[in-house]
Image 1 (cartoon, rainbow, N blue to C red):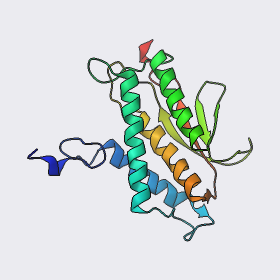
Image 2: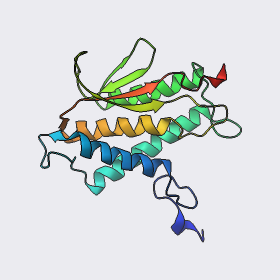
Image 3: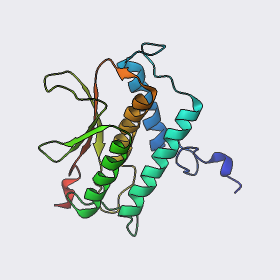
Image 4: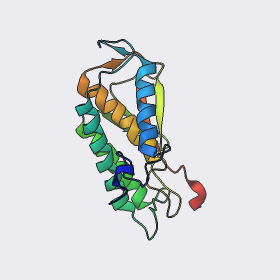
Length: 182
C-alpha cells in the first residue's frame, strides 16, 4: 500500500512505532547479551550476530507470536486466562520450542516454566529474564509474551553459536501473572 514503507519491519504495525514491542525486545536482547559477557567468543562482551542469524530469530519470533495468537484469538485481541486452557497451551508451545532447540526446561514449584542453556546449581548466581504468557481478557498478544520470547531467543542464539555466558541465564514464563481473571 501507499504506507508500506512505514511498516515496522519486525511486527508489521502501521506506522512503525519507536515503541514496537519486538524492536524493544530486540534492543533488550542485545543489551542483555552485551552486558552479561560471553565466554569463548571473539569479543568477551558481545555475541556474534550476523544479519542472517538475526533474520532467522526474527522469523522464529514472528512464528511464535502468530502461534500464540492463533491458540488464544478472541473477538478483540487475545484471551489467555490465568491457569486456563489457552495459557496452558501457550506454556506447552514455548516449552516444546525450547526443547526442540536443545534447551533445558522444567516447571518450578509455582508451575512457572523455566528454560536454561545448561544445568545451573541451586546456589549459583544467575540472571533471570522473562515475563508471563497469560493475558487480560481480550488483551494484546505481545503483553508478557514478548519478554518470554525475547529471553528464549537469547538462549537459542547462545546455544546455536556455541557461546556460554559468564553468568548463567534463566528464562522464566510466569504462570498466572494476570490474576485479574479472579
